[in-house]
Image (cartoon, rainbow, N blue to C red):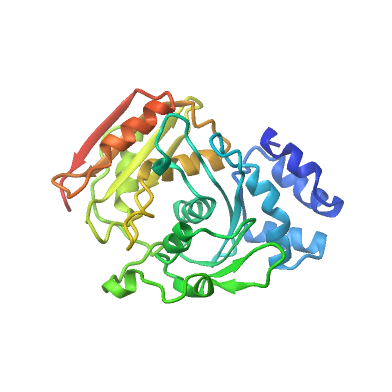
Length: 296
C-alpha cells in the first residue's frame, strides 16, 4: 500500500478496510477501481454507490498535494463504464496560483486520460467552487451530472450551476470526454510519441490550439496529458497539469520528472510552452522539449 494512504486507511471502518486491503496493497493500484472491484467492495460492506463513494473520500484526499493551502480535497468520479476514479487538489511551490489543480478537475481528467467516455456522478468532500462547476459543465454529461457531498442530499450540476453557460451555447458539438482523434502522426521516441498521442485527444474547440505533454519519470514510467479547454476560458486545464494528475494518481513524485515533451500545433493563437517550462522548472525539471505539429 502506498504510504500516503496509511493514515486514512487506518481510520476506515473495519469492513471497508477488509474489502480494500488486497486492492490497495497491489502494486498495480493506480487510484481507480474496476467495475468488478466496486461490486466486490459493495458486497463486502453492504454500502450502496453513494455511501461507498463518500466513504472513499478520505483515501482520495490523501492523494492531495497541497503544499500551499495545507487543505486536502478529494473527489471520486464514477464513469459510465462502471470504473471509479480518485481525484485530489495539487499545488506547486514556485509556480503561480493559476497552475494549481482542483480535486474535481483531477478526478475528471483522471477518468478522461484512462479512456472514460462519460461520467454519471462525482463525490467531493467540500462544495465545488465556481471554477470547478464551470469546468464540469464542459463535460458531455452537462448539467445532469450528479454531485454528492457529505451530509447533503444528492443534487445535479444544474442545481449548483443554475442558468449555466457552456459549450452548447456556442454550438460546440464535441464535448469533453467525447472520443476524438485530431490525426497527428506519432513519431520520435516513446516520450515524444506519447506527447503527440496526447495532443490527438486534446479538447480545444475554442482556440483549435491542440496540445499534449508527456512526462518521463525517474522511475521510467511515461504519463501523457491532454489540454482541456473550457467555454469560460479560465477553467481550462493545461496539458502539463493533466499529465501531472495522471502521474500523481499512479503514486509518482511530481518532483521526480526526468524529462518532459510538449507537442502543440504550429501557428496557434496560444502556446502552452512558456507556462509549461516555468512550472516544470518549479518542479525541478529542466529537461524540456517543445515541438510544433502541422495541423492535420
